[in-house]
Structure formats: structure tokens, C-alpha cells
Length: 110
Length: 179
Image (cartoon, rainbow over all chains, first blue to last red; front, side, top):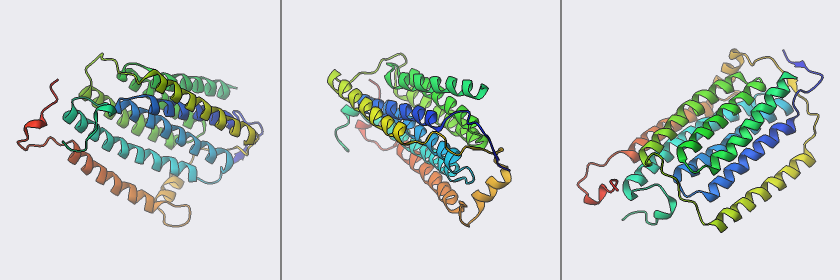
């Protein structure tokens, strides 16, 4: 079923560099933004970079097994859960404080 | 050769749009750039012959999560309003932190990753194998995490409804949303 190719079309390091840049763009956005939705978008970037790494390590280093594939599936599912709950919290924060910025949220309960 | 050209196009799209997504002034524009990044990532999965992962990425990320984001943006932002930035020293220090982390990790990767890794170009993973490993209980089979994920999804649906539900109590401080 598996056929070994002689020449590698794209080296593994190229994928890793792409996901590295994506991850640190996410870190930068996470640290600089005040808006809660922007922070969530940055977290999505970081999680997506991790997913790329799972898939790439699976395909290049352990191509006979499927662990990286399944880890990427479960990461995507957990990211979906996390986004749903976080957006519910953001909408609730907006309803209570009038905007969705982190600096305005000082109290847990008025 | 075609594979390389497609990879470099996708890589440029990912890099440019992920940097634009965290530096744009308008939040809806950031969400759109994030959508481009997610679709290009799905293209990378297709290039790695993970067809099912490609479908999951398009359906869950580019479909579901982006709809959630755009709905949340329209519920919490006035259209066209630009976002406040942090103070410039905070932006500069975070940029320095991100760039230094990028350089350190990039150095470690370039130093340590063996360039000729065993890339076995397999066929498309057959649906039968996929189903067996998702529904089996033996080694390298994932029935238990699959079921746990389903319970987690249920819990998160219930929790999201509970959090975002409009409370019908007679608390006068509740309605501060008109600003």
C-alpha cells in the first residue's frame, strides 16, 4: 500500500517554518490586542499551527501509523468546543459591560 | 514540481494573512484573514495526502468556527469601528518577544531537523482503516477519546447555552448594552 518515493517534493523543514511563523503571529496578536475576539482569533492561529505540526510529523516521521492524524482531529474538535464556550462568554461580557475589551473587566460580579 | 509551486503559494498565503490577521485594525477584516489562513492550511493537509483531515478542517474550522466568529463580531461590534490599540511600548515589547521566540525556535528547528526524513507517500488513507481505528478499542485505536469528545461537545453546548442565555430576572442593571 505504501510506496516509497525517491525524491521528496517539499522538505519537512518548510512546513515547520510555515507553522512556526503562524504560531508566533498568534503569540504577537495574543499579547498586543485588547479585544476579546481578537485574542480568540490569535488562539485559533496558535492551535492551527499545532495541527499542522501533528500532520507533518505523522506524514514525514511515522508514515505507517496514524497517531498524528487522530491527534489533529481531536485538537480540532476541542478547539471548536473552546471557541463556542468562549464566544458565549464574550457575548455575556458584552451584555454586561457594554463592550468586549479586557481592560474594562475588573470585577467578577457587580 | 507542481507540488512545490503549490506548497510555496500556500506558504506565502499563510504567512502573509496570519500576520495581517493579527495586525489589522478592523476585527471583521481579521476574521476574514483568519478564514484565508484556515483554508490554506486545509490545502497543506491535501498536499500531505490527508484527505479526511482536509474535509474536517474545511467543515469545522472554515465552516463552523468562522460562522461563530462572524456572528459574535456582529453581535458585539458596531460595523466599521476600529479597535483600540495598546500602548506603543506594550506593542513593541510583545513584538520583540514574538520575534525573539521565532528566531530561537527557528534556529532550533534548522539546527536539528534532519532534512531527509522518511517521507513515504502513501495512498489516500482508506475510509475502512479510518473507521476501524476510530471505532476500535485496541492499541492505536481511538474509541475512548472519540466518545469522550462527544460528551465534551454535549457539555459545551449546554454550557454555552447556559452562559449566553438572556436572564429573565428583574435585575435593572442587566440591560447596559445600549450605549
